[in-house]
Amino acid sequence: MRRIASSHEGRLFVVVVVMIVALALTTPHFFTLQNLFDLMTSYAFTGILAAGLLVVLISGGIDISFTATASVAQYVAISAALAWPLGWVGMFAVAIAVGLALGLINALLVSTLRISSIIVTIATLNIYYGVLVFLTKGNYIYTLPDWFGGGINWPLLSAHHQTYAVNLQILLMVVTFAAVWLLLARTSIGRQIYALGGNRDAAERAGFNVFRLNLLAYGLMGACAGVAALAQAQLDQSVMPTSLVGKELHVLAAVVLGGASLLGGVGSVPGAILGVALLAVLENGLIIAGVPSYWLDFFAGVVILVAVSSTALELRGRHRARPAATA
Image (tube, rainbow, N blue to C red; front, side, top):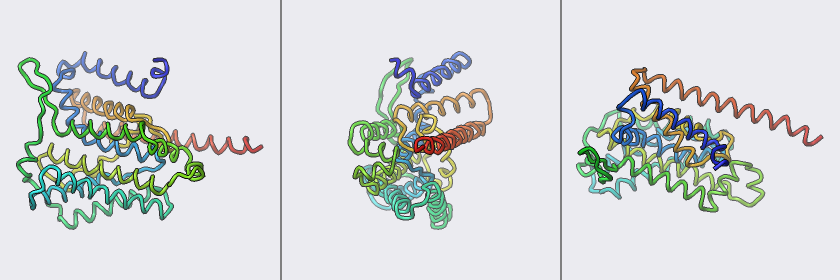
């Protein structure tokens, strides 16, 4: 218990609980089951993407293009489902395949060009998004397949004459976080991803296939983008090519808040979940308090700035330590 309490996740959990208690005491409508389910539903898109981005950050890279990847996967999958009788499995297969393909392109570029992953993915963000808008002319899709538009609702509990159900968004977020946790915590590949982010040179000397690990990390990010895209499409009941791009900082802020390092090798699924929860509670509190929503963008920007600053200070400390060690 002492180890958990002294960890980043433990401290973040305390912060989330304090914020929840403060909002519950000041706003009677905040601490309700309905508000909890609404928050999980509205933040499923961010959570699913945060799960994928966590793996990329732990591997020592970074991906900024996932919102554009999600936009492309969403438009292609819904268009295909409207044109052919794909069903649930076929539509998710299309979305995941498109996201996986675009993620693998990122991995190939990062591995072969040997330049910063942030530069590569900023470029692919604009390429993917530009091609999508050009080909679709920015047209929205307002009609979804009937079986998809209705989504799923699995009754979970009943209270005060109201039934609370697990919907598609919550289900996909839980499954995605569970899958990523299993990968990172219960497989040898997960340990290799941590080792790659901790020290790339040491990982190569140990015989790890860095190229394959990059393919896995960025490919998984793309697959998560495909899943998140369909979750958001069902929630919005429409497909808008321009609606997803621009949410990158919120996802990155959530993962960094959860303890993932921009240097790689550090991060956990519980931390990412708590980071998403903190952003969700903060935004909900701002809305209830009547504060303009752009303050959440301000907060996300501050988080990224602090993370980048701490990363720069850590790198500076490493460079100073090397001459001392060699001396």
